Amino acid sequence: MALAALATLAAAVLLLASSCDAAMYKVGGLDAWAPPPASKPDVYVQWGKSLPFKLGDSLFFLYPPSQDSAVQVTAKAFAACDVSDPVLALDDGNSVFNLTAPGRAYFTSAAAGHCRRGQKLSVDVPAADGKLLPPSADDQAALKALAALPPAAAPVEALPSLSDNGDDDSAAGTRGVAGAGSAVALAAAALALFL
Image (cartoon, rainbow, N blue to C red; front, side, top):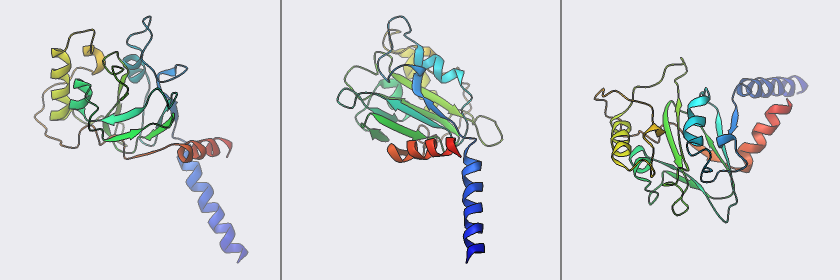
């Protein structure tokens, strides 16, 4: 009986140790997820490009729940700031999105006017081999829609330059995140830090 318990404990420790490679990033590195300050209008664009995201990482959106939210959207919805039909919406003030699949994932605020003021983020998650997936047809459409918008509404820099490869991936925008949570994911990440 004691040997079985020890084996179970060892397996649990190995599982936790393997997940310690994952990182949790506080989105934007600011005090809170909010429209960017006038002094840094592209803070989320630059932040999303500056970090080496990988499978298993998490994005932590911190904000006052009575004033904001964090939503995952498709590429087209991201470009148009259309939050009417999000892929996933969280509004508890401590939103955690887990990056569990390779590809580009899109996030914004559902608060009125916040997306158009630059409160939006796209992140690229490479496959396990470190290679980025080619941009999908939806990613291409998002880039074209962003280019058509006035610069003050949505800067073209929100997406890196994409080449047209003809891929049609109807799951674009949803493939980068397969799970979300709040207190549970945050507690698990905190527990992993202490082990």
